[in-house]
Amino acid sequence: MKKKIFYSELAYLFALVALAVGVMLMEKSDFGVSIVAAPSYLLYRIVSIALPWFTFGMAEYVLQFIILIALLLIIRSFKVTYLLSFATAVIYGLILDGAMLLGEYLPVTLPLRFVYYVLGMMICSTGVSLMFHTYISPEVYELFVKLVSRKFNFRISRCKTAFDCGCLITALAMSLIAFHGLVGINWGTIVCALINGWLIGRCSAVFEHFFEFRDAFQLRRFF
Image 1: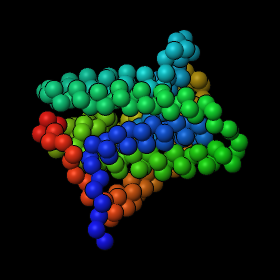
Image 2: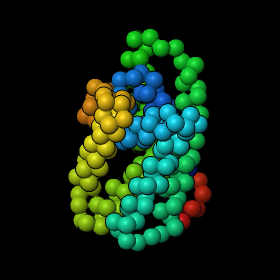
Image 3: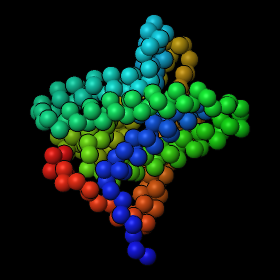
């Protein structure tokens, strides 16, 4: 079977949209957002109490800016391309806010909440898989794991696990301090953490079976 061409630049755009829609659906289910999204979701819920205009998308790029500063202090080096990861975070934040607005029109019943959760997790996994097939800078989360593992010669899988654990601990602390209970973190967060890697792998296998990823523009050298 001849594979169809899938341009990596389109993969980048589709990935951001898929991630935003997936996160919105998981939030709508109220069964728990993903571990990586949990700290920014808690930041949004906390700050929006005092500042109603503060959105989930804003929380995403504010938090990723803080993580970027922490990354630069850790690795003690700077490249202009690192700022492109923050630009990706801003673009994602804007798309996420659009998805959240659309999500307000979705009906909510218990059966639909399960549908939203399953679809959201699958769509998020699809988005992550697509991001792996583009050269354009990923969000700061992925950049942090990549550069810290390279700096200290850690296995990237262990560094990713440590980063996820840090996100979970941070989100738990924020939730317990601000709300005296669990907000945004539920059984769905744990299920997502357990099977997300497998889902991403399956999505990648499907994409690579049917598509050949190529660059539409000669821009890879700038990233």
